Length: 331
Image (cartoon, rainbow, N blue to C red; front, side, top):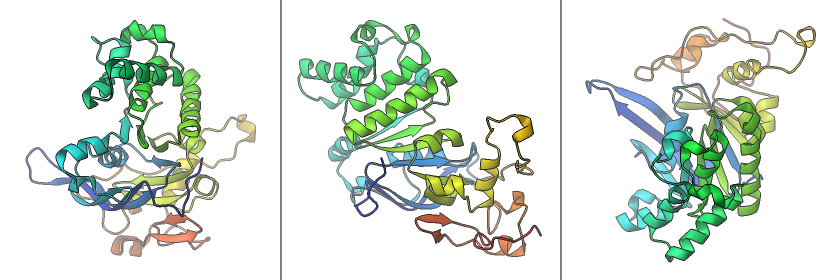
């Protein structure tokens, strides 16, 4: 379900920065360094990048589990940080996050129904009977029979535990859910079922998702738009079909080339782009274009100037000096 590009965004991020001091407090890790984007109501906004790129930090900042170092995050035009404490706590219920590991997210000493009920009890929503009815409805929506409610996490499969986490998030009837690598720990055999569940819930409940992953095939399957992140910044953002079909940034091209093809070896083309070296340190990122140290097309201007964030195609943005020059060659 694509979001309405003309409607007020459900989340608006401007010049977001999130930094962490090192243990000796002599330096700052720039996990997110000047990112701006909108999440449209009813869409699935995908964020993809290597480990350490800052995508999980963005997800946590969107629901204010992390406080931004600089910049603004608005929810429906409202700055949650400006709200009084009680109002802020109530407001946050509309913006939930689902983490990667369901085992770590569930208390092994609590039954499944107790875990699903916990957010409602903390919020003091309704009567005891109403809370139980809402928790049971959430379990039913994610395909969990009520008899599983009396079991403990160790008695469930990985896919069932992830459905419990989804049900728990749904009990508060959120407007937006951040999904942080939610299928990464699942077997391939059940990954598709969970992704289809997210699509069904979005259609039935009008949810908005921010889907964070390192798996390009996953984000392409479920997202309306994709943002590609590298070393704390977005390098490309656009509609899924445009980003995956005609990537404009060399980093996105390299990510796409690494996707396995379900073809016999005789039918595959030699399209793999091998990136040299490792991602630089976010404590001291390269000058100019941060990808230049691994880019086969890097030239002197890439070190001297930070590439502008440009809309080269409708709703398709990129930060690269040469993205609009189809025949540029390596230096």
